[in-house]
Image (cartoon, rainbow, N blue to C red; front, top):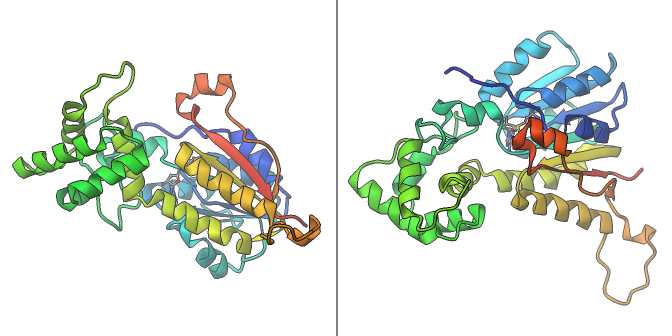
Length: 311
Ligand SMILES: C[S@@+](CC[C@H](N)C(=O)[O-])C[C@H]1O[C@@H](n2cnc3c(N)ncnc32)[C@H](O)[C@@H]1O
C-alpha cells in the first residue's frame, strides 16, 4: 500500500502549548497519527520526561519507529485510547500523567490512501477501519445490516436528512450485487439523493456517518473520557481537538460537568470548595486561524478544548 501524503498536524502549537509541558513530565498522545504533535512534545521534554503514544492504526504505529526508534523516553501502543487505563497500568503511569492529547478523527494518510476505503474521492475497497486487525469493515456491515439500522447510523452520525431513502437504496443495490468499493457506495448515495448541493459531494455525510459507526468513534471517546480523571496527576491537563459537533458536544459536556463539581439538592447552601470540581476549564474553545485554514483546509472545523485537574 503506498501512502500518498503525510499528515499536517492541526492546531499544532496551540495544542502543545495547552499541555503546559514540564521537562520531566509524562504525557500521552492518544492519537499518534504521523506524530506531528508527538514530535513537538518530545522536543519540549528533557531526558527524564516520557511520552506514551497510542493509535489504532498499524501504519501509524509503524511510522513512529523511524521517528523515535531508539528514544528511551518514547513508548507506543497499538490500540484504542478507550484502553487508556489498561495502558497506563501496564506502564506504571496511572495517576501520574501530566497531560493527555486527543486529536480526534482520521489522518490524511488514512483519507488519501484509496486502499483504506475512507474516501469517496478515490475508488478503493470499502473498508474504513482505522484498526484493520479487528472489527467489521464497512462492506461487511453494509452487506448484512437492516435498512432501519443503516438509516439510523446515517441520521445520528451524519445528520443526513435523506437517511431512510439512502438506506433503502443501499439495501436494494446489494440485492443486485455486493457493495464492495467506495465508488459503488458513492454512486448509490448520489442516485438516492434528490437534491443537488453546490460545492458539496452527496456522499460526505453518509461516509462520515459510516466511518464513525464502524470505528466506534463516539463510544471510544466516552470510554476514554471516563478514565481520564484516574490517569491524570494533580495539575495534569486534558487537551482535545474535535472535528465535528458530535465529538465536540461530548468533550464540552464532560469538561463542563466536571468543572461544575458534585450535584447537591436544590436549595442546599454549598461553597465552591464543597462542590469539589474535578476539572478547571483553562480557556474558551480555540479554533484555527484563517492562515492555518488557508494552508490546511482540513483544519477548518477543528475545535480545541483544554481543562486541568485542579491541584
Ligand atoms: C487526526 S489524526 C492525528 C494526527 C496526529 N496528531 C499528527 O499530528 O500526526 C487521528 C489519529 O487518531 C487515530 N485514532 C482515532 N481514533 C482512535 C482511537 N479511538 N484510539 C486510538 N487511535 C485513534 C487514527 O487512527 C489517526 O491516526
